[in-house]
Amino acid sequence: MIKIIAQLNKLASDTVFPPVCVNCKSSIPDQKQFLCQSCFDEIRLNSALYCPKCMSRLPGTDKCHDTSYVLAPASRFEAPIPSLIHTFKYKKIEGIGTILCAMLISYLKETGIDLSRYVITFVPLHKSKFRARGFNQAQIIASVVSDYFSLPCLDVLKRVKNNPPQAKTKDFSERIKNISECFQITGPESVSGKNIILIDDVSTSGATLNEISLLLKKYGAQKIIGLVVAKA
Ligand SMILES: [Zn+2]
Ligand SMILES: [Zn+2]
Image 1 (cartoon, rainbow, N blue to C red):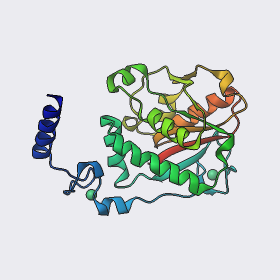
Image 2 (image 1 turned 60 degrees about the vertical axis):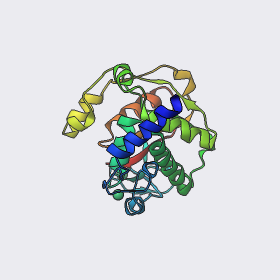
Image 3 (image 1 turned 120 degrees about the horizontal axis):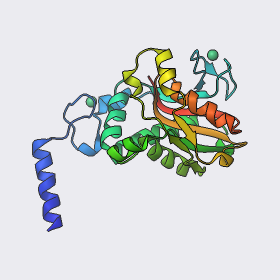
């Protein structure tokens, strides 16, 4: 019975939703490919870390401006990346998560950073948002990346204020205000003395990564890398 239902569902979804590229909507042979070849070919990976303040490329993990973290964006927020991130964020399509994780892993390898002394953590969702969505895309990415590099993945951050999404707050000072005191740390002893890779899907103003990095440093964290799929 289940098999028949699965077949009917497949038939229905193929009929109603023929496979299309999640970015340009052109027809593709199989929905599991998510992107057409030309959109896939548009994906460009970075190879360096950046100063989050002036976006200068950094040599290794050295700093340029005095910032709480260095930014590690695997790519730019340009097509087809926004479509991939958006689809993953709201629909949790595993295959798209795999593409995003593969991008982060290839990029991290390309930077040549010695990751052996790092632990991984991720930007949390407020519990009401987590409940509504059922998952945290940053947590899923963090768990895949940490498994790949055999690094510990710490679940130690809590979002205590459910603020309007960053995209809806326009200017930088408003974003800083919006984000301040949004987060708490639940396992302070586990971050003390550690180098940390803090994962989110996208960095826009950088206010979230900055706020969490300051918090982690307050509890003794050493170097912090803000690892994101893309810098918007
Ligand atoms: Zn396409
Ligand atoms: Zn700088």
